[in-house]
Image (tube, rainbow, N blue to C red):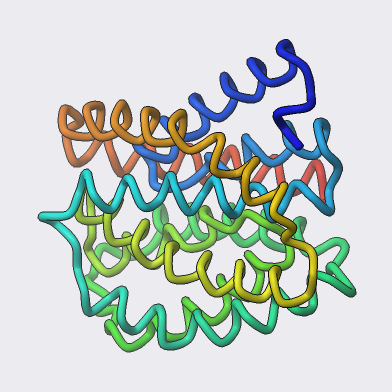
Length: 246
């Protein structure tokens, strides 16, 4: 599919994928929001989301490997408990009735979360690991429908106290469980042909390179700067979601 787009379009997609994967390697999210519009332009919405899921699976898998020493398995386990069944459900519904207008709600949510993080009283709020079952359920369901909810997941991982490599790797492994379930649903409903799988895998080397570059950047960032960077990308994503609204 992507292989038939022509050299110019293929190189442009590879460039966007590299930037998107590097961004995700630094912040843990944002890559899908950047790559999805380019894929939609190239192959259309119906094919773009499954291809994006394959590419994200490779990209997230590489971030897991690069941050493997800092993973929090308990967070991933609870996330998967809620995420896998709801990713399957969302993937089945995607083939029939994508939800319009939901993106604006996500955008507003992100802006409110960042505002709350800046204005809340400076008291410690315990975020229990068991709550990641609900985080996994909600984010996996929405991801299967609209393709990109990384910014929605970020506040919860930060609230649990994960930063830098622990945040990037743990969020990536949780996302891998979500993407695998989505792909099973996409395949079962007939919207993940072999051409889409090949197209997503063809972007894999670029996604891995971006993850490696992102890891090098994260290792050099002070923790406070890292958190500010995450919040800045959340604000940008929230505004983008509000403006685009689809």
